[in-house]
Image 1 (tube, rainbow, N blue to C red):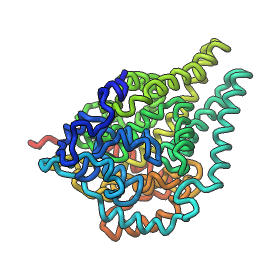
Image 2: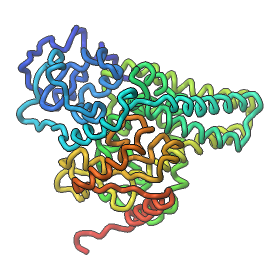
Image 3: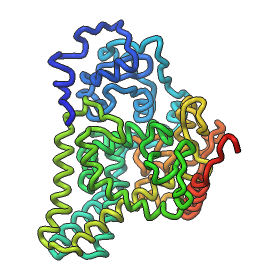
Image 4: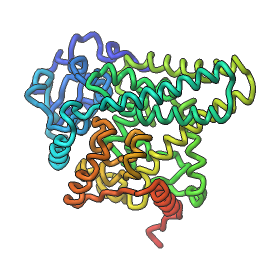
Length: 447
């Protein structure tokens, strides 16, 4: 269990105790101080600022002890307001450290797309979205309640799994990116839908917002590029003879994401980490609510049905729901970041196709792909427009089809590849060929 923020930071009433505005911090200094965060070449009091953050305290808390430069840029689509944040300034990054710079090309693109987002919505969910969200959420709750009353059936259980996936794609995803509403409370409440469908909001934020979005396809830092030997996803992965067949067992294996939801989440919550990366202790106040919500899901979705109808059939139906939802979610996320020609990101001197020194714009665009069009976007929460989503996660998914032509033109004008597959099948075929190629035994330097 993580220590509370108060225990971790002692009884001090503020970060400024013993700290002057001229203090210089190394990245290790900040990593040891979850009450601090780095933006550019400056260090700020994250603990003091989080309660004033319009998007919610939990976003700032997750970046306690971390560098939030690109996170701010990506979510606010503008330069850091240094003068406005001066009262939270506690020092500078040490001269021995290389600061992360804002990507001017990206900010120029943000200025272009701002003209295409209606000022009345500011990029948040349009009124029509709430009808869709209500239908999806209402259908899932009604179907689950009906099966508690009438008993589990296999086909309705599969449909419920699909509805859970749609909740994940259309509701919690935008909510936990802060893209549904200007109100942090609305986003937080709907973000907890992740816990309703069996996941964990805090773990999702750590995995997706803190790690995956900022380090997409990074061979060391992206948790979605770690298959622990079951798959060879990147050129730096060790090869095993079983990888000869990975293009064949990939799709059945995606149903196993269900066991992550049911089992791995609990152990990761207790350890307060994701894939070995600690969750900031500044967010420790979310630990107990997150654990209670996970246990509540087990009680509601596993224990209660088995208590009412204890049978193998009930257990199979529960598994069918979780495995269906898991497969649907994993399938679309996987094909959007694993395809022929996709970039892998690594340090200078590695065998990856792109270094971490590449621009934010290039790193996000060339590690993602799009598939289909507006119809699939309506069904899947716009996540078939993965390039637009990775560039503008705090813009509601309903705007992605409108933004895509401009984004494509801008990226190609800058010499950045923009990959869009016309159909799901063409995207899947590319993914399977990519996995087949990675499954071949790599040649040694002597060969």
